[in-house]
Every structure is written in structure tokens, then in C-alpha cells.
Length: 574
Image 1 (cartoon, rainbow, N blue to C red):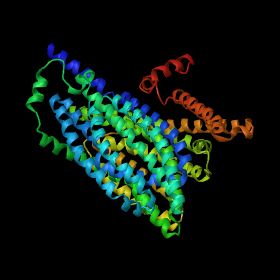
Image 2 (image 1 turned 120 degrees about the horizontal axis):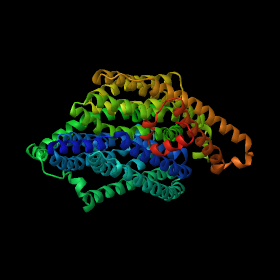
Image 3 (image 1 turned 90 degrees about the vertical axis):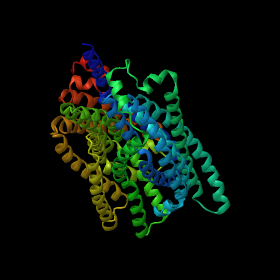
Image 4 (image 1 turned 180 degrees about the vertical axis):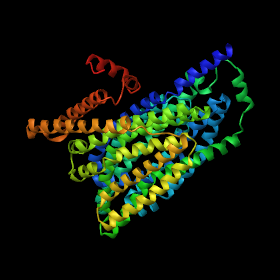
């Protein structure tokens, strides 16, 4: 009876920890808030540095992201995967040893990547045909080292089944990032103006302003790292960090007899990280490949470095909108991998398939309406965010590339599913195949059809679509999983299209109702955007319930789901 009680207690704890939809919702909500803060601070930042400065900023970030992926981006996934598998076996002592091994690993790879970016900044800037981005690249170098340590600590807590520390740290990180970025960009932009006057140049202000924006990234990461250090060593959290069960029973004894050496853990960490690094590197390096090929191609077509930076700056603004809904899938993926790993370790095929279905469906409930919303409200949203510029190019880019939201969200989640199924080799193969097709499409559109920056957007859609198709085939074979279509794709699409019509109708109606003088500036655009978005959310929520896309139980699992359920019942929609 005592044994059963212990097992039931373990199952209850495991059930709470494995509730990845709830944990994913926490991280997704934080991710959305982080992206909203990112949009808000990018408005004054863009006002300071303009499209040209934003081009340097985006170019530097593309290089930084690849080095981050190669060094520490995969650390949360790898550490959480190792922690969760040992928790499933009751090897509590090894969890602490994994944390220590991860920090040693982060010291080595983070330091090497930081040195590569610092000393290679000039070379990278020349390769992507934006030489003035070298200042932003250098300021990002220390951030890579900080992110390596931060990745280990985030992965440790995620492996325990809690996303709250990661969510809080992301919000704190972004708040500091926002404040420091705007202040530093303003100060360094003025310094650049003085350098322009002294040298007769025009680019120093934009380049140094972009570098100021990237300083905020490092300040935010350092703040988040300090938060995790305090959380880890604080007396109030030692019970969580040490991962000790209430009683030293058989499972704890088993964990001690299985104590793994640090050498073995370093080896396991390396072989766990390596396929994720390669997969993530190939999957995400398309941005750097795009940056390089676009720069080289536009140079051949006769465009100058300043023109290339301006086009790339517009793409960076488009990606700012694009990244908000994709953040939900990234958050869901972070919570899915340790949860799915535990189900696979237990051999629970029913739970495995249920988690796969829930993750894909939840992702599509967000991504599909987001894509439709970006298309319907591209004009007022772009004019709200970047009010001081001519946004005609950005509006067209947003409408042309909105479909990428769906495919990137789906490919992100399905990558995580394959990693959780211990098939980390498959995303590597799929990313490589998709990248080859992507490059061919990009070169054809850029040099053959001369579509300019649209070539990059359309090629990215093709890349993500190929990833989705290949991942779906592999998941079906590996987990013997059959994808449900109606409630996952068809009904959300129908609800989203009707939502888009309603949102566009509200926007055009308000534009006709208000005098033209009231619709100038950000305040004027806000009068059009916020009511339209509110109407879209209300229409989409009601349609999901009325058409049977979600039921009461599923609704309760979503962020603020219990409160929404009460509201729908009062309105007699449930």
C-alpha cells in the first residue's frame, strides 16, 4: 500500500509536470508579452535609426543568431531533455550533476563563439555587404557568452516541468533590453552624427545607433542571468533546485547507484546538443544565407550598400510582426520536449500521440488567425508601428509573407516533436533538404525574375512548407500518428477567414467614420488598429466555440481559459 501511495504521488507530480499545454501557455503568454514589448521599443528605436540603421541592426542579428545557435541556443532543449529523462527514472542526484556539467560546457562554447564574433566582425560585415554593421556585431559578442549560461539554467528548470522561471526571466530581460536599447541608440546616434560631421561621412550615425540597440540585448541577457543565479542559490528555492523527494526511498537509492561521472555527462550533453545544434543551425541559417545571397545578388544587379541595408531593414520590420505568433510555437516547443521525452521514456504511446496532437492543434489555433490578421490589417498595423516612414514596401511584404507564420509555426512544433521522439537526426536531414530548395528558389526569384526583397520572403515560405511536409511524414512513421485535419486546420481556417473579413470591415468603417485629421500619427492609427483587433479576437473566439473547433475542456487548458469559459456560458455560447 505504501508503494502504491508513493507511485500515485509520483504520478500526480509527473502529471502536473507533464501538463505541457498549461506550461506551454505560460511560456506562450510570456512570449507574446515579450514580443509586444519588443514591438513597442522598436518603434522609438526605428524612429532614431531609420530603415538604414535597422538594416545594420537586422544584419548583425542574423550573424549573431547563427553563432548563438551553434554555441548555446540548444542548451535549454538539451539540458531539459537530459533532466526530464533522469527524473522519469528517479535519478535525482544526476540532475544536479547535469547542471554543473552544463555550466562547464557553456563556459567553453560560449567563450569560443563570443571570440569568433568579436574578432570576425569585420569579415562577417563585408560578406553580407553591410560593412557598417561591424559595430553592432562587436557589441553582440559578449551577449553570446551570457546566453550560454542562461540557456543551461533555463533548461534545468524546464526539465523539472516548470516554465515560470523562464517566462519571468524573458519578461525581465525584454524590459531591460527595451530601456537600454532606446537610450543607448539615442546617445550613440548623436555620437555618430558628430563623427559624420568630422569625417564628411553619412553612415556612422546609423551604424552606431544600431550598435546602441544591440547593447540593450546584452544588458537584458545579463539581467536575466542574474535573476536565475539568485533563484538558484536562494534559500527559498533550494528544495526545487536540489530535486530531493520527501522520503529517501528505493528510487532515490537507485538514482545514487546510477550516479554518472562528469566526463560521461559532458559526453552525453555533447551528443545531445550536437544534433540539435546542427538541426537548429541548418533550420535557422537560412536568414544568414538569405542575407549573404541577397547582398551579393543585389550588388550584381547594381544596388549600393545603403540600398541593400534599406531593403534589409524593411525585411527586419516585417519579421518583427512575423515573430509574435511564431513565439507561441517556440514556447510550446520548449514545454513539449521534456514532457514528450517523459512519455517516450515510460513507453506510453497513447500519451505520446495525445501530446503530438495537442501541440500541433494549439499552435494552429494561434498561427492561422495571426496570418489572416496580418494580411487584413497590414496597412494600419505597419503605419502604427513605423509612423514616420513610407511603409508601402513593408505593407506589401507583410501581406505577401503572412502565410509564412503558419508554416514556420508548424515546422517549429514538429521539429520539437521529432526531438522529443528521440529522432533528432530527422530535423537535420529535413532542414538540409529544405535549405537546398530554398536557395534554388531564392536565386531564381532574385536573379532570374528580379523580385528583389520579395524573393527572400517567398523563398522562406517554401523553406518552411518543405519542412512541414517532411516532418509530418516522419512523425506519422515514427509515432504511428495520424493527423486529425478538421479541427486542427479546416475549422480554424474558416473561423480565421471570417474573422479577417470582420477585422477589415471594422478598419475600413472606422477609417470612413473618423475625419482624416484624426488619423494622423500613432494615436490616429491606434484608433483604427485596436478596435479592429478587439473585434477580430471576439469574432474568432465566438466562431471557434460555435463551429465546434474547441470544446469546454480544451478551452479551459488555454491561457485564461477558465475565465473565458464562464464568459461564454453567461452569453449562452457554451
